[in-house]
Amino acid sequence: MPALRVDRDDRVAIITLTRPDRLNAIADDTLTELDAALTALAGDPGSGALVITGEGRAFSAGADIDALSALDGAAGFAAFIERFTDVLDDLERHPTPSIAAIDGVAFGGGLELALACDLRVASARARLGVPEIKLGLLPGAGGTQRLPRLLPRGIALQLLLTGEPLSASDAHRLGLVNELSGDAPALESALALARVIATAPAPASAAAKRLVQQGTEMQLADAIVLEREIVSGLFATDDAVEGLRAFREKRPPTFRDH
Image (cartoon, rainbow, N blue to C red; front, side):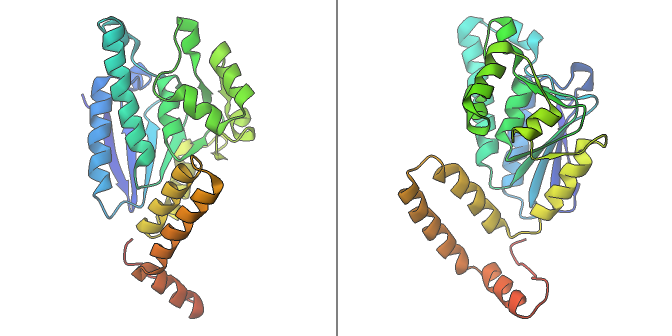
C-alpha cells in the first residue's frame, strides 16, 4: 500500500500521508515516495503551492518505531536519519511554497516534517511536540535546529527536554503555527491559504523563499545585497511587467509564469 498520495486542487498540490492505522508513521518507503513527489512537483509549472497533510486522526506520530527497532544499531539509524534529513532539506529548499495542515498529533519526525514546510496551519485538536527524550533519544532530522529558529530558545529547549507537546493555541501564540482552523479540518484553511499563494508568479514565490532562507543565515549587509540582486532580476521578468501594467490599468494581472 502506498505511504502517500498526491492530489490536485487547481494549482495546489496536496500530499497526503496514507497510513492512518499507524498514525501516518514515517518509514523508508514514506521518504522514498515523498522524495519522488517533490521531484515531480519541482518540474511542474502548474503547481503554485503545496499542502502536506495526514489521513485520519493524525498528521504524523513520527518515525515508525517498529522500523527503527529493526535498524542495525547506530550505523543503521544514522543512515535512516541522514535519508530523512535529506528529504526534509529538499522540502525546505523546494521552489514551491509549502504548508503543513496539522490535525491531531504532529510528534517527533512528524513535527520535523511540518517544520520543514514554509507555513503551518493547525486545527483545535492538533498537538505538536518532540517526545523523543522519553525514549532516550532526540529529534535527528532537523528538529533540534529548526525549533529554536521558529520558537524562542527557552521554549524550544523546554519542548526538547520535557517531551511535552504544545496545544494548537499555544503553538499559534508562539508563532510556530501561522493559522488556526478552529474546529474545522486544518486542510480547509490550508487550502484557502495555498490558493492565495498559488496566484503569485512562481519566480517571485521561489525568490521570496530563497531570500528568507538564505538571508537569515547571512550578515544583514550581505543579505541586502542578495535581495537587491534577486529583486532586480524579477523586475525584468514578463510577469513583473504585466503586474505593473495591470496596476496602472486598474485590472487584475494575467501572469504568464503561473
